Length: 254
Image (cartoon, rainbow, N blue to C red; front, side, top):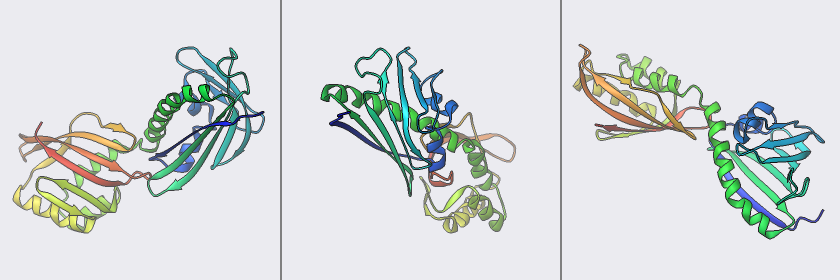
């Protein structure tokens, strides 16, 4: 089959490669970013089926699969238009990076116009994909955020450092109106100073963690030892692919 027109899209997903690949091989995870009823049999010759939420159906066949690096399959519409069954080829190549997993999608077509029509479709679909993959990779984000706020109330420096090392990278960056801190070694005494000048102040998460592709938006309240609110604000957390925090920015007020 002659497929001279090629669409390439490269994105980086803030999740480990094994998790990213599983969304191309496990039927339930495949359906989570395509639509209910979609399925895949991730072996050479296995069936690929996509049912979009609007009812449009796409079918294909797995050409080859090399876990956890590569999968390729044919792709065509069940109606035969704009692509006949098995009328195009999709290849997914994954490689680990320092920020997660680099995903290189190649879609080969027989016609230039059809290729161009799929540019935005893949831009949108891989955005959905990144969200479901990172939602799974960072399913424990709320617990990590709570542990972060708990560390600010820990009075013993050594124990404070242990708490932080369980949830943050060694070189974690922290910024707010009172801090320009790089690394746990600098953050531990900074928190100690905060406890000295604002004794008994306790930070707690307020509401659910809002997560988008490795970035968290978290509201919090600050209360005195009597439980009376003294302030509130919002933190932005940036997570590495392994779930550790690599940057935190705090905003008072709101």
